[in-house]
Image (cartoon, rainbow, N blue to C red):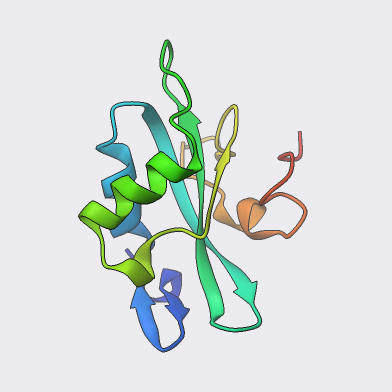
Length: 112
């Protein structure tokens, strides 16, 4: 995880890769990417884009919050979980987080 990927939430550092690893350990989640969203109180907060695994049901935000609280410090728990069909990737397979960081994509539809 690159230092530039760190999310600074109210002076606390959140490593997206740490949060992603916890989310990927959840049985219903096939893919996860964590990005920063601007917040007037905390500066930035983590937001997770998740892909639900084939045959699994979306566990819902409250269940994911509880799961993350059991496995992460409270300040690292994503503020929001956005279920998407697929994460945007480059031809080499790297997640294009800059697309997820755009205000219109986090909490909305990903561009085609």
